[in-house]
Image (tube, rainbow, N blue to C red; front, side, top):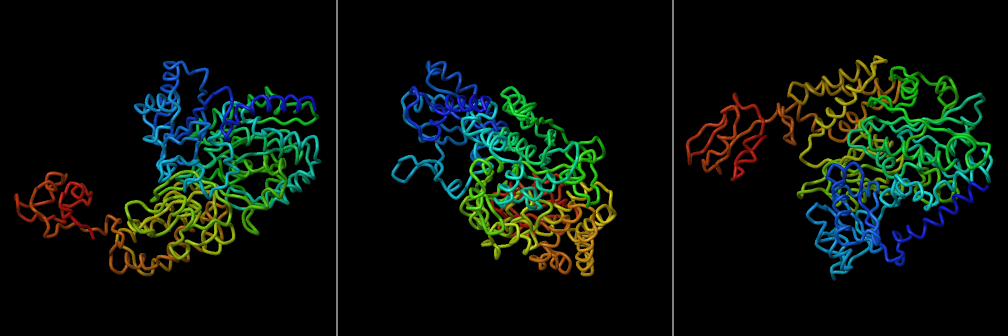
Length: 622
C-alpha cells in the first residue's frame, strides 16, 4: 500500500498545476500553452510551432510564467494546427508560424485572447469568447476513450497520474477479486469496439476460467481501415490508459504477459507507447510486484507490417508468433487456445481505453450512457465529403444526422448528402432515409451495415455508388490473405464484375450473379475479412439499385465519375478563348479563336484537364 501512497502524493503534487486546464485561475500566475502533437498537426508543422512559441517565451522572459505542453489529438482535425491556452481555454485554430508573435504579445504578454486567430465558432455574436467545449463540433460529444487526448502530455506519466491514472489498477489489485473485476466489466455492458461487438466481460470470463500455466493479454492496434485513425490517436494522446487497462485485464484473467500489436506505420504512437511502458515500469505500475503486490504483468510491443487481415484476431496471433498472418478456423477461440496455444484475450485499443473508468467509477458509469443493448460511447473517424473532418466520440444512440450535420457541419460547397459508408471496407452504405438511425450495433446490422472499428465516410451527390463499392472491394481483394477460396477467388470475381459495370460492359445478368456471389462469400469465408467483404456491394445494391441499372442499361454513370462512361463536350456558351485547347495534353480540342470549340471524342482521354481552365464553364461531361 506504500506504493499507492507514493502515487497519491504524486497525484496531489501535480493536480494543482493541471487544474488550470480545467478552469482553475490561480497557479503562480502561470498559463499553459497546449500544442497538438498528433500526426495530423505534426504534418502541418506543429513541431516548428512549438519551437517558435518557446523562442517567443524566451524573448519576452515568460518561461517561468508559461508552460508549453505537448498533447495528443484534440479531434477537430479540420482546423489544425491547434493551440489552446489555459486558463481561458482559448482555442486557436489553423495556426501558422507567422501568427505566433501576435498571439504571444496579445495573449501571453497583454493578457487578452487574440480573436483574429481564434476558432470562429468559439466567439459569440456579442464578441465574448465562449468555452470551446460548447462549439457545435464538441457540444454533443461525450469523451471516455478520448478523455485525456488533447488534455495531458502523453510523454509525462505524472500528468496521467494526476487525472486518476493507475488508480483503477490499484483498486483492482487491492480491493477486488478477479471475479469482481470481471463482473464489473460484464455489468457495464461494454462490448468490443473493434467491430464484432462481443461482450468484453464474457470474453474475460472465458479467459479466466480457462486453465493453463500461462495466459496472455493482447491489444489489437492493427488499424487498417482506409481513413481510420481512432486507435492511433489514443495511443498517441493517452498511451498510459491502454497500459493500465491491459494490466487490469491481466489481473482479472490471471495473465502476467501482454502484447500490443500495432502497425509499424504508426511511428509516433509506437514511440510514445514504448516511452509510456518504460515510465510505468520505473514507477512500479508495470513489471514484477506491481505496487509492491504479488501481481506481475509485463508488456511488449509487436509491430505489424500493415496487413489488413491481421486485424482478425487469429491472424494477428499468428503474426505475433512469427508466422504468416493468416486466420485459423474457430473454435477453439483465443480465450481458450490463443498465443502459443495458451488462453489469450484480445481487445482493441478503444475497448481497453474504457476499462480504467469502469473499474474506477463502477459499471453504472457506463450503463448510464447509450442504449439498452449498446452501452457507453463510440469513437469515429469522420471523413469524406464533410465540413468538419476529425475524430469524435459520441454516446451510443446518437443519430447519423446529428453526427453529420451538427458535429460534422454538413456537406461542403452546398452539395447534397447522398450516403455514408460506416464500418470501413467491412461496413455498408446508408442513405438519406436512414439519417435518423441511432448509432448502435443492432440498428446498423438491421440495415445491412455494421459499426466496425469506427470509420465513417460521408458521400455526396458527386460520388458514384457503384464506384464506391468497387473502391472498397478493390481494397479487400488486395488485402485477402488467400487462405480460403471464397475470399481469394470470390472477391476477385466480384471485383471483375464491378469493373465491367463501371466500364459500361456489364449486363443485367451480372447484377444477379453479383448478388448471389456476395451472399455465398459471406456464408462460406473463413474469417471476418471475407465474411464482410461483400457488405459495401450488398448495401449499395440494396439502396442504389437504379445506379447499377443505369450503368448496365443506359451505359451512363448518373454521378458522372466513371471515366469509361463519360463523354466530354463543349456547349454554346464557349467564347473561343482557346484556354481549353492549350490545356489538352492530346490535342483533342479543335477550334479557332472566338469560335465554338469542339472535342474529338476519339482522341479525348477524359483526363478532365480542360474543365478547370474554362472561364465560362462551357465544358460538360455526361
